[in-house]
Amino acid sequence: MGIDLSNAQDAIQIAPGRFFQPLHPWWPQIHLQDIAHALSNLCRFGGHCSKFYSVAQHSVLVSHYCPPEDALWGLMHDAAEAYLGEVPGPIKHDSRFGEQYRMAEVELLEAIAKRFGLPFGSWTLPQAVHAADTWLLAAEARDLMGDPEWAQ
Image 1 (tube, rainbow, N blue to C red):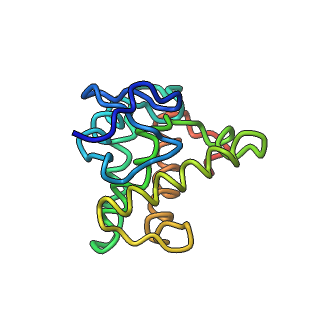
Image 2: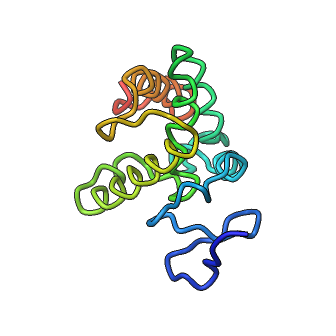
């Protein structure tokens, strides 16, 4: 059955009714269906795009632009957002907030990597995943955000 986290102050309730501690992740409690459910309900760009476009849609496309050996990481590169939420880049990278967010994100990605048997060395994703994500960000900004200068 697992550990009862319903009274843990840092636990969140996830869709199936279980509780999860995103700031203290334990890899056996990470489930693909929970990630897929949450990411399909999260909108990219903090919800400020011209139409609903989910983090799940973005992740599937990133996986398609990666070589086969990196495709699973492409699919899972934003999986931590299933538990931390989708935070717009300027906030995620701000030194006042971003450092704590990135630490939590890295800890979650390490647990996700362990859960799904993915390599996760030196706290970075494969270069092909980063390249596909960056390219797709520019295309999404063009198509969903009116082609802003920050995405050029």
